Length: 142
Image (cartoon, rainbow, N blue to C red; front, side, top):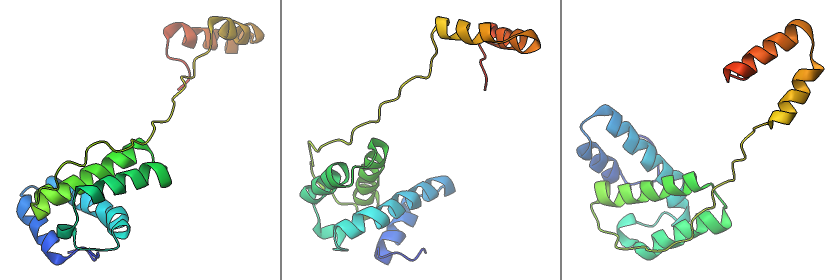
């Protein structure tokens, strides 16, 4: 049993919940996420005394104050829901609308045909041939 501030009964509940090793490991990762973020946020209060308003405040805290990535907020949400549904077996109710962390913008790295032509025109000989061949096949430089 890993050493965490979570009560031993939660680890026992997790072991009862999962038969397969991979599922057990996934559960451990989710509980570890709870240990790292949820427990310090709730000041290590007993999870059975906390409810939907605490989950809402926690998710708001991650998005607004910690400014975590949306994937981190989603993992935290899944970890807390898993903790309550599968391990504690308590319905935490509806924590409804909470502010979502913003997804980062992903800008594609694509050069225009004119830019590609300018680069290829500055090359000569074998290098130009190889570059034109790679560009023509659509592979680019990986």
